[in-house]
Length: 182
Image (tube, rainbow, N blue to C red; front, side):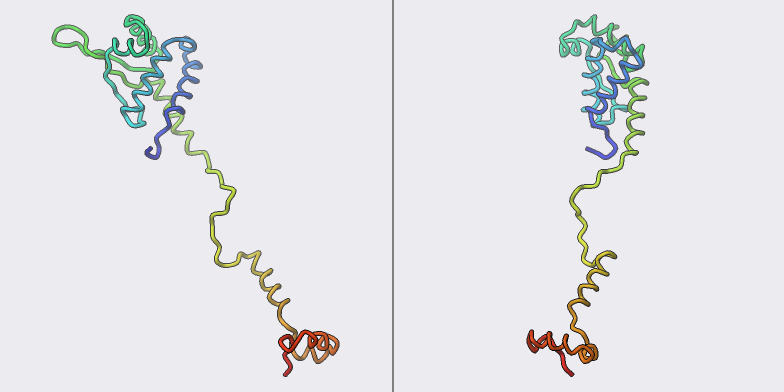
């Protein structure tokens, strides 16, 4: 999916939330079924760019797909168009009959899409639990610890051993490798 494209479930969820809020007459209405179907088609045909999508579909085909009558589809489409969720028109053919209906996103649907697009940039990505950064050099915390540990492992100099005969005797018991006598 191209970057900047909203997912279909996000668009549908927001559309139905705001459809019920901004147009209460559509809350429990079959017009939402038409809107859902057309949103899916807009999304598929435009590859996620619902705001610029345009589809051509006969109202009888829409009625058959949704299991509603053609007359009821016409009434519901008028409601959606009056509420601003869809823009639709059927061009008149040379025979005087109307052709297939051309559907586009209405101003309310575009309003939802703009709100979703503006809200996307504010989220910050979660940091994963695993540390993926390899550190080849010690950090500022590890450097003093490393130096302290390194100094602990070093044997005292010959001058210090000369002033502390008991320490020298104790180190000589460990073997010749421990004491450096000069």
